[in-house]
Length: 113
Image 1 (cartoon, rainbow, N blue to C red):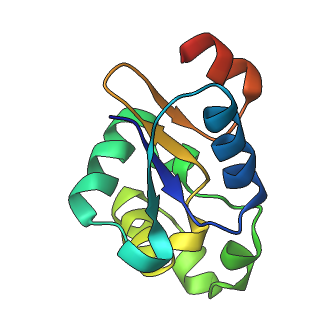
Image 2 (image 1 turned 45 degrees about the horizontal axis):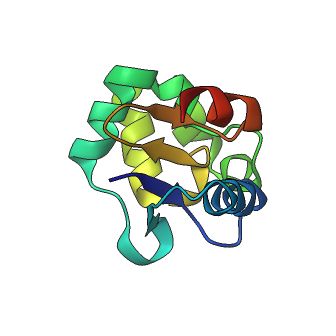
């Protein structure tokens, strides 16, 4: 089963969902706002992708965080921030048996899915 992680009102999520639906790929949507995200999942993603790839430093959520939280960021701090502020996680994260992708790129989806 394919799971798409994100928040429903995100433009990247909307594009990814539309692409999956247009290409008849079934998926489950995991809404961070409703379901949150557990520490173990974030730890696994950080090992696979690196926390730097998961933290969206361009978004308003990141910019609004206290500088003390953002200073000297490391994996443990990043995981804590992502758990407490799920909007800071780069979107979407797509996980399937064969493929794992952070962010939406139509070219990547075509190639990998």
